[in-house]
Picture 1 (cartoon, each protein chain N blue to C red):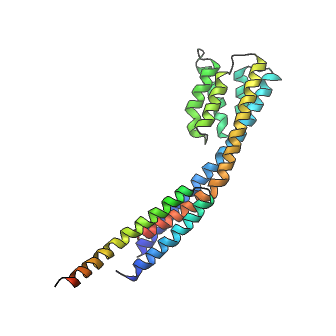
Picture 2 (cartoon, each protein chain N blue to C red):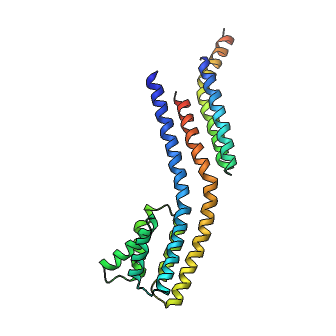
Length: 173
Length: 64
């Protein structure tokens, strides 16, 4: 009997923990999209007013933020430093491909970042600024969608975890 | 066949109705429908054994 109670408590704890983890993942995505917009804004300032080259600009940006998304910038710098034959676009795409798994961003966000990378470093200052603004506005749309999703899903995942655990226990008991 | 079977079925019913409400509120009507169906299937599987014994009893009653 004691064993049964302990087992059912463990099942309920595990499933509610799972629900909480999913709920937190939902909350992470809008936050990261917001941070990414801020970082891109900073990148625009770096290249327009301070006229820094791309490695310096990215290095500064990745230093200012401790968010998970700043890893794109630091990885791009590492790629550019490590392999002189690589251009900015390739380095950016490589770093996004390698690091998107660590963030909460989904495929649509990845596509936006990829199309941002395609224009990176192959036009004049004005073209770059336009590209950055385009990426920011697209990310803003994604952020609004993600925020809506979060509102809908966060409480659902929490209650779904707990209730699912109780359901499993009742069926197995 | 014991009283605990009835209690278990009642608990599943309550749980499924709460799940249904939660899923409906977050705008996932089709998933709510699926949970209702899943609850129904689970309860039917629990009850199937009892139904078999009921049919057996009825059969033995009418076989002379």
